[in-house]
Length: 378
Image 1 (cartoon, rainbow, N blue to C red):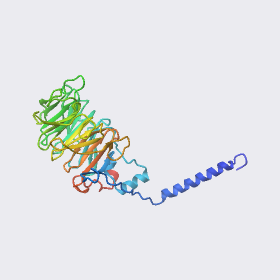
Image 2: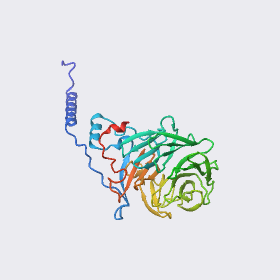
Image 3: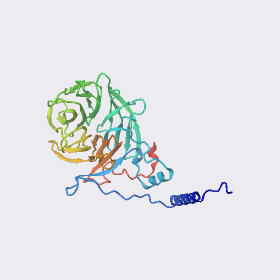
Image 4: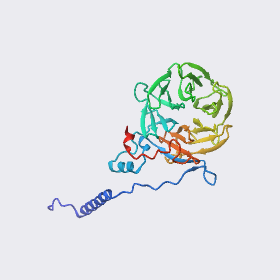
């Protein structure tokens, strides 16, 4: 290098340092890498010294979270594969049946299905026949047949567990604003929530015959009295057959018979525990306890059959951490007592396990066993 092209001494020193740093980085990348991360401390609810009832189990961001083994972790490290191959965009509701978790996504225009027992991932309603436009509420019957409230088409789309389209019922003439759906265990009767709107008087639950698609009857009218609704949202059927409806505009949950007879209500507007600010989703466990998500409180609250608060899980936060939420929506409780909560803002589903259930027990007990990432891309 002649005098005209030689780098100044200051630049040569900087360039040499850069080369040294790059070579060191290269050597460290080629050296054995410990991909194990130290486990986070257990997160339980309620906090000590109270006896723990639920514990945080996992967060799901997309299809790759079916596989969490070391082989998959190393493969992603070496190939640069994304941790999440099919991520959530804007999840809305969740339902779980015999180890398969179905999550509606209004932006992806599909329901994302995670089969933990078979380690399979697939999309439901993404193609014709049965293509959905804006899936919101979801539910399953005892055979894991899936029912999807399609807000754009104003229909309830019905699919087999494997995603095979069966049929759709309803239509534009049936709803002002379809939002959530529930179905009885036998799969014979569908309860669809017509949320209505400010200018609409159709704030109700519409009940259909699942086989014929015929509208059987309506439950509720707009109002504040028992049995009336103002912007109803989440809906669930209890093990004892009662119907639980989130009456969002009246800041309460109403419990009725399947024929619409009022039984009881609980909740009121407020910021304290046991109050509601923006209640959205609801699920009922086998003991007839209600789990209600609240988008303003950033949590879900658990109430006994009489409407007394048992426990709350989660807090509102702008930081995406465990049990931290900005916009919680759908909630579900599976056969084993695991709780699934959707957060729309952070595009995640978090799962909580009863402390009485071992991590390896129940339908999700083998979630972590498979280490081959190939199935997650199907």
